[in-house]
Length: 500
Image (cartoon, rainbow, N blue to C red):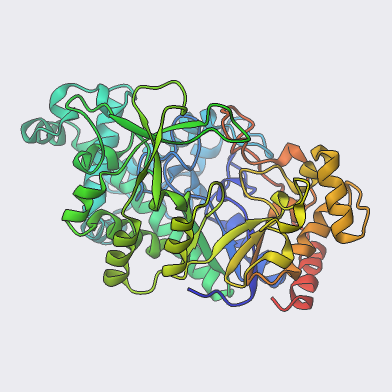
């Protein structure tokens, strides 16, 4: 896939402004699309949209196919008769600039349960034909996901491998009993998914009408506690008790003496190969219903994965184990055609990863914040003059500090290298825009900048600090008043001047 020369903004929908404590898929999302169009942009890049659990990370979702109920626009439910005005009379005290996921878990789930109850008791039966059609069309993943979530709720939130053996191991009699016992809970989960996908479809159509395409994001691995792992256990490495025998991570490097122990289950590529990679075909098929382009996180895992024996406390004792990414992508391409994929090829990239990327003509990534470290920095692959056309350049990603924050915390060698390379002496106030300009001026066909950098925000607006958990991750939101038209005009001027 070759992307035309263009640009976009990275912003997860949870960061949108709005009245109910978290970004939603309604008016604020449409206002952001309007701003992108005014700014002359082509793309809105988001993070994974799946339902989040412990840690609130969009990269650890309960499903690779489902949508996040937290993003459902509640005002739209009110307009369609699923919620009443009185249900909004007494609201929690929401922080307009920060998501409180614990608060959302309690309050928003209550609101969605009320919406389902109003539908179930006949007040919104006009939705039934569309709901029935949705259930039929998405049954392949939806049935397992709804049962999984209903069972998880019935088990007090315990992971599936801590359930009793019958449901853990998907014994047919145990599952049939659960479907009968939890019928109402299962139907509610399905209805909430119906609401999410209905609203996302409307938003994506609105974006398309404004000339904005959406870049989605899918993690290479699924979460241990996910409907995907539970329903497709044979396609991963699990023992008879549902415990993984090996898990994913990355080896020790400059940034971590012990590596990173992610803990995701690893794919059994031999089993997947036998059925023609049907799970992957369905996953990409589902993602292409949501997005115009798909970024794949940790692309190098399709060439080889760092396999760590389970249990382990660190990633030190892992080993690289080859994957069957080439065979998988061939199967997906044969089934679905040309794949609009961006390969996140950061980190330890070996020739086999580059070959896999280039064989399928996937554009890779470059991050300008990584361009100025080291002594002989002129050979750094991420410097603008070293970039390729079929590449996506970022000032930073969700895992980086904001660009303003990065400059403030950069070591003296990085600052020196930047000054030498640009023959300039930026200040903390001017640096983010200078790096944004550098991204847009580069030869990479696509430049993507986090909204925080466009707004010139500091570390307080960082989206994620890898390897940590807490309310400093995934919680940042902007205020509606901060998304100014003059800022859009400034971005538009740069976009037009650099031929994007």
